[in-house]
Length: 488
Ligand SMILES: Cc1cc2nc3c(=O)[nH]c(=O)nc-3n(C[C@H](O)[C@H](O)[C@H](O)COP(=O)(O)OP(=O)(O)OC[C@H]3O[C@@H](n4cnc5c(N)ncnc54)[C@H](O)[C@@H]3O)c2cc1C
Image (cartoon, rainbow, N blue to C red):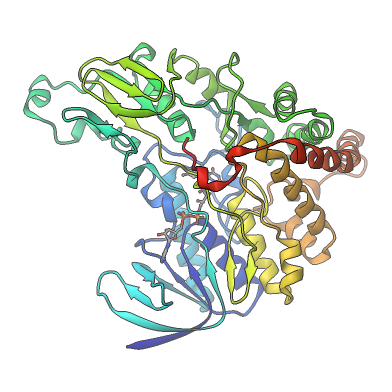
């Protein structure tokens, strides 16, 4: 049996493992062994549905050392006028470049695909079964703790009667060339009626894809167990020309944090300020999983009028759906699209720096790439775990609306802690992953308008934190314990 030695074993070559490794290799002389069960870098993106795109600008996704995309704005489509959003295949080819052009040429990263870490800490190659002993001199890094569940390898959590067609969204673009039964093949017709199951971003992408690919809105039913608040993509734009929208929106959020009387009031204020949107204005959403969307996508989704709000699906039969709170008839031959995989798996927050371990989690919501890179920087530049955990408090994911004030409180206190660390502050100002950091460093000291926005942001920080603490203490959250589970 062979033995490998390394400073860091990084488990998982998704965005988290790659962004962490990239920052650590750039900021230290450490040697890294990066392993993944999958055969290529990129994690869940390698199996994403074909029409997926980033929901945030490419400009601040990926790893710190390599740009993703060309920082251009889309001039057509539902994202027109806003910064480009990489497609899933662009993200995968980007991570392939990260591996070939950054990490491997460093000479300090060893990449082992199709390899898993066994519970006893040894490695096993999944193709040969070969076992390798490991000596990890510094830390084992769990870069898979926040891994999402995805549609491609998700087992539907409801019964499907024989004869019902239910597919993941991955199957949609290839419908015309997929093997079909003799009756369908003879008629040469694809399904003309569709039911979208789920209310998260995957379901929204599926609705937009169906409509843009020619499906008629009246042929689409949408099972939506919960309504969701959505981040307005205009507020996430990295270019200076969007300063009023991006940084101005941060100030608007601070004001809402400072003045809201309840969590619902907070979101209504955020909506009034243009920070968040909802698809159906007559419904008060009960979910906020940080999906980011453009007004064009929302308008498109509003064309689907058959929205079914009877809870989750329990069973699908050829002529009806059985849901938690009722039954709904469906036409024969309807294609069901399972978008119920939870991108945000509930997992308890834990300290990031532990004895001999690092567990990558969010230090800024909703930015996993930035978070992992920042953790890599902190690991490289500080030696005391108390200091490191002080800079990297785990931001708990807001599984329920009531969790949101506590989440934002940690978000803001992390931001304040980073500002007090000169080295980290300088890194952030230069980091492509800190969407707004580089923008802030370009503000012209003579630009009274931008300075006024920054002054407003600063003045609102303390009242925002005070009121968030009050809201966090009063908002009772039965669903905030991860054991309850969550599904879009
Ligand atoms: C459809 C979709 C769109 C999204 N869009 C955005 C976006 O626009 N912006 C954004 O910030 N976030 C987005 N996200 C959130 C996304 O989850 C993160 O951006 C990020 O990709 C998560 O990466 P990860 O490395 O944590 O997990 P993963 O990509 O799942 O990677 C974890 C890896 O660990 C490996 N692994 C696990 N256990 C082991 C083991 N024991 N041994 C070896 N390997 C192991 C797995 O094989 C996997 O490859 C999106 C998520 C989804 C599902």
